[in-house]
Length: 173
Image (cartoon, rainbow, N blue to C red; front, side, top):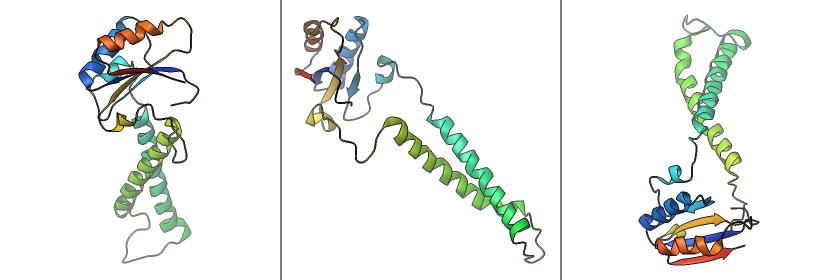
């Protein structure tokens, strides 16, 4: 979370109350900044209007790159750079290249996907994050609404959260 965001935060004890408050806020056309849960909760992506991730596309092209480079390198080394006749085997023995090609495909797909994920999400080991509530990693559910614009009625948002089971509502600057 970026430190310059002004948020009103509702802390809930269970996911049912969290989903209820989020649904009510969405019905009232109040934009939800984010929701934090100690475990995955089904239905959050629909409430937050999250689109399907494009990460599988990156993985596919990274794996394809790895496969092409692995086969190219093996063919180049065995046929062009250092051709050695071993037991009468042809220089471009495609079948012998499959295990190495498979391994490099998996390696490129995995490493490039993880690197792209960290780059895209901004998750780095040295990044300092503000923790909204210490219990969110164990047992609390947090719903955050950004109130940067003055058109948002904070008392109304707080009332919706409390009416839907929030144990605590606070503001974060």
